[in-house]
Image (cartoon, rainbow, N blue to C red):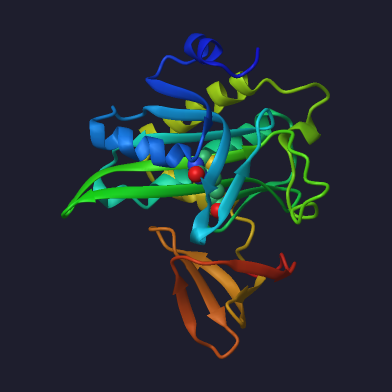
Length: 252
Ligand code: BTN
């Protein structure tokens, strides 16, 4: 079953819109949100021409080889920071479902297998003054992309590397959306935060924060990373890149 309007219509019971090719599913979902899309509606594409990543980066989605979706969610504003966690937990479950071992969440919300990135998440909020209108949870997952001739060859990985047979992207999308629903129903519970925290693969490790070394100590309930820098400063990091520079799992 290949990705098409028909296959998705029979596999998904939620409101969704499918496009063979778009600039960015997040942009389409944001426009749909403003037009009144229901909570849980999804935009799915086979190919993205201008997929967007965190920190202004681009995200490549060639045809036939990946998942690219954006889910429109309308949580209570106080729980907005948990939407990234919901996305990462859903993708983590998907990785385990296809048989991948050594799955981890690299703070804040990249999902990795064997330390390589299999998925990126970009959650974008729309506010109407003080009121949260909704959040677009954008998720890209590598299924069978060819990274060989790219700069990502040593840092990216595909779900299909863990499967003996060709994976069906319709089935993957159905499972992923079910898991997102599962975690979204529990968004207010401590379970979401604790599981996201326990699945992070950075805590206790030496890390590079900007040009400073430090140790990743903890995360706050709104998703910030707490690091102790080499000069003793304890810093809460809300956005940006943090890299592990040494594996040291003995740190308490
Ligand atoms: C990152 O790792 O920097 C986040 C990448 C997020 C990519 C997804 S693909 C579906 C959705 N549409 C976009 O334009 N971006 C997100």
